[in-house]
Amino acid sequence: MKIAVMLSGRGTNLQALIETVHGFDGEIVAVASDHEEAPGLRHARTANILTRSFEVDRFADRSARDKAIADWLDENEVELVVLAGYMALLDDAFIAHFRDRIINVHPSLLPAFPGTRAVEQAVAYGVKVFGVTVHLVDEGIDSGPILLQRAVELPGYSDPTEVHQILQKIEHELLPEGVRLMVRGAVRRDPANPQRLIIEP
Image 1 (cartoon, rainbow, N blue to C red):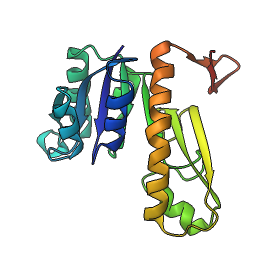
Image 2 (cartoon, helix red, strand yellow):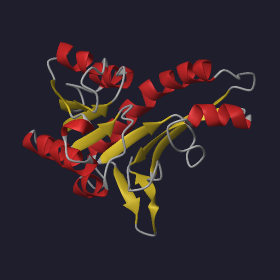
Image 3 (cartoon, one colour):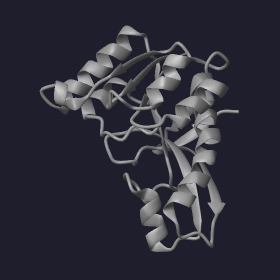
């Protein structure tokens, strides 16, 4: 299966995918970013993966930018889109174009603490159990059907940076696992409840 990864920052999840999925369970054929200088693009270039940046100020609006990304992914015959630290919202047309073929990794146990400051919100709320979610992407904010989750008890932690570091290690394991399930075709929606995913053995 041909995979695209979209990122905004350092690309540690991309590196985890390169090391565990690329060339084994699927082929990462394209990496897109909304920042031309995103450090994560270097991981892709080192692995000889095609890259391109799509900064929104180069386009008429966000919809035009997302259409350009979709067209580029189609040119590269992408079948699965993986959001790995991609911090920009995708417009509805992009999501519809790749319906049920976009997954995202998020540093909370959704549906708790959606959005960009999930760890900070969880720490401020005083939670004792943190976690990571891999989910399908829909038109809402981190509201798509849940594919995988893993929890970790951190009762004594109050520093978001430390929590981020712990959760990132979980992300590096859980996101590749989610990609492998998608590549295998092991994921389908429950006909009785489309918000629920069934994982085939």
